[in-house]
Length: 432
Ligand SMILES: Nc1nc2c(ncn2[C@@H]2O[C@H](COP(=O)(O)OP(=O)(O)OP(=O)(O)O)[C@@H](O)[C@H]2O)c(=O)[nH]1
Ligand SMILES: [Mg+2]
Image (cartoon, rainbow, N blue to C red):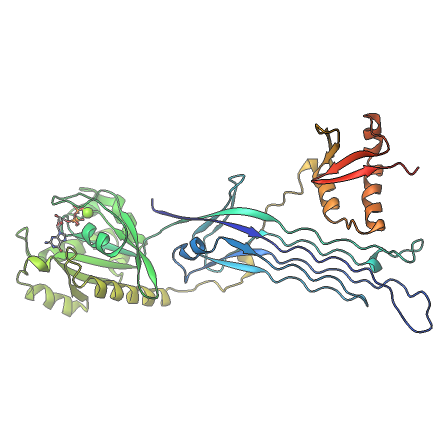
């Protein structure tokens, strides 16, 4: 299996901080709070795009960062949300979280989308904290951080164009001369026993080319390497049919061509109808009488190219023609889903819903600090604005109401002791 693979780092945008602001109106000495909420940070979204075929672009650019949400403003104005960053990948890309190895999404259809990192939430402005008791809250919530992840994208290459033909006609040689693939090439029949794939890079497009093992008469009935490799041909959209034009094995080129067509047809009518180009190979060692074959191809409306896979003569023209035919085949490719169709969106697996979400773990570090951790705690901690008394008060209340402070005291917390959350140290002073 030929797999294209790229590793990138993504980071969604931070949520904008809520604003602390008070109305200032003439003749009104103490205007009420009017700090607006911060905007949501941008998401990182993967989108499958059938215009792409390889992960080439992702190999050049490794880091992707979505913009943050805007901060809230006075007069209760909301901060604008950060725009989502859309990373386009070929159809068939599989998205994997590198750290856990978890499979996140399989973007199997054109237009399928997947949110791989959600933007941070915007913080509430101080006007949201006003209540009957607290008329003038002088704090606001900070926006939460974006998510950072290392993502592996894997793409199982599916051949767009298949090379067919009898054994030993030069199929593997053609693959090798037009792509970076290095298939085994030898002067005997059935050198290739499993399809090889390579990427053909042209001036403004690329496609995946497969070298299909040689066909012999009876293949469709299971003779020789039979059905297995016919299955691979089935997926391709265009066929390049290689014929030994030099007659080096003493067969007539037209007979070869008809034999292969017959095999394909008896396997599947659909397959036989695929657009096809003939490649008359080995012209460097002379050409047999080709009039019959050329007459037949003309009457069937099959384009042909005279090539030498060994010297590369005519190979560029052949591949350009294959690319053109492929583009035409895709244009007529039937109904494709509309880009942005919501039913194709995949959801992020929500990690927050795990049962231990509320648990708070207490550890004591080597330097004697009490280290607190827990998902809900970290979330609250992330949205704490440490420049603001009211916001710190929230965190404090959370710890007290969860009896954490009581537990810490039981374990020896005294005034001046250190409580650590993430990398942040706080000194504890009892104000009761
Ligand atoms: N002179 C000449 N020899 C060629 C050319 N293309 C292929 N050959 C030779 O033909 C032989 C068979 O080539 P392969 O590319 O292995 O043929 P294949 O169709 O992949 O054969 P199987 O995998 O056995 O079905 C090798 O010895 C090649 O060097 C060509 O354009 N000119
Ligand atoms: Mg071969």
